[in-house]
Length: 405
Image (cartoon, rainbow, N blue to C red; front, side, top):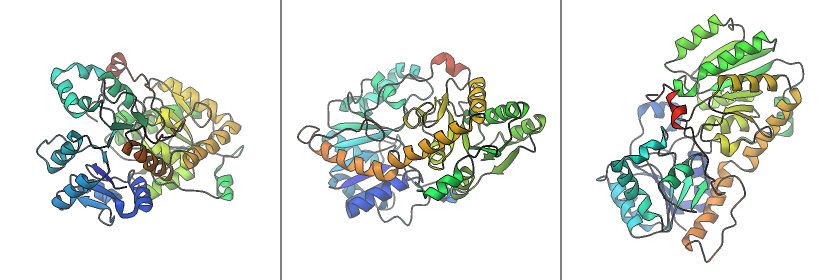
């Protein structure tokens, strides 16, 4: 079975999954990059030049077009809006020929479903998605609120499944796990990792930390990342009297970010509804962090089960985050419980190896038009059916001033 994955370019959250696909399928798996990667991402270590299964349509046009035409299954991610590009033309031909295909998408109405009432926009969505609603085309939802967006326009009925991003998975020994679990009486290490921009609300973790200090919690807050809110955040730390409690690490390579997570007991993830996924949640859970996360971000409803393997707060509420974080910091047994279950969730369900194996099995099902050979859909994790969840509403969106970040 030949599988081709066509997308703008491969990123470091897709590489582990693609590596597993290539390991299982060998030369029958290929990734076609549609556009060059920008320099900033290359500096972050996203370079794909050494991956033998990656082909660039802007450098190897005929080979890439042949891979798209000859594949049994096409995985189709974001390829841009240029209808004259070789990638758009070739993938479009394949869809119009009714060949089996699997779309992978984040939200199409991230800033609000009111945008679906634009006639021009709806026509574009019809041309790209709705017209294939009865064909052998399926949708992998890279985020918990994706299925609702597509259901609203009538696309992919009964053919939408949970998906996401799969950062590198680290398996720890029992001895390592034991050393990473929180012990009663020790200083609690809390981390925040992400760009310091409005949609990620880095100020939330600092304001919550101020409350922790006022209530006598012994902690150290590690903030990893950089961005246009850094100076504002540093001032807030100073004004809150938190210099002795906070370490600003700045931007770090992925391997160093993981080291900070591995030494932390709790991770705060405060992004709002503009966060399509949030791979730091995967990474933190893998690193045995008890995650306290905003339910508005795409990864959170898929990955976190309330009070089982993490904690959530709704409507990006600072007060709810603060209450959840304080209650967790005063319950050592719960910290350890969430740490272990978080790790097991990534180990047993949400990692690249499991995603690749499930997808290959699902591809065989799709090749048989979803009928001749049944696919045993898992109850949870990648390729389980994506339920429709209600996203942040219009009034909620008015409270956020972040549409440019």
